[in-house]
Length: 220
Image (tube, rainbow, N blue to C red; front, side, top):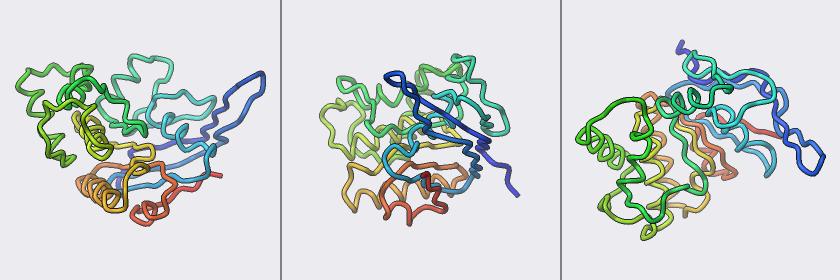
């Protein structure tokens, strides 16, 4: 049996606002494996985005632990957590978080520039081109992001997540702004990534997307 790519045990997380505390996650334990596409679903405020942030080393839980590829996440060392995430986890944000005034190429190249791996310009170029091809982005990489449609921006965010060839892809509502045909295309891409051995975890409220995943995790 394959080893889990993500092992979360007893995760709890609360947020304090206006002197009141709200528990978003309470003792959540989950296991994710390679070659599979997972849907994390639940109503607004159920903790989907928070869970994704915790298991991708972006948000420190109040209690509990997370292992990625057999290695415990060290939330107390922000630099180490960022470096680990850069190499092993590709994150696709719901709001894209692209540099609108920059080119597609510059946006996809960013994780390579932040990586501790020393690559030549030619090696970075090859990685960027491969990532754009994997995301099925067909336009010129010199185009400014602000000139792209929503679907094209989504493909750029996917390419950026893939450029370091991470073992894990985590996406927050990756199909929320897409029509039915484009949702099918993006989900087909995620399926291809899973078949190649990656673990794909999606937060979604879309029932159609859930039906296209291998496993559905419901948060209440």
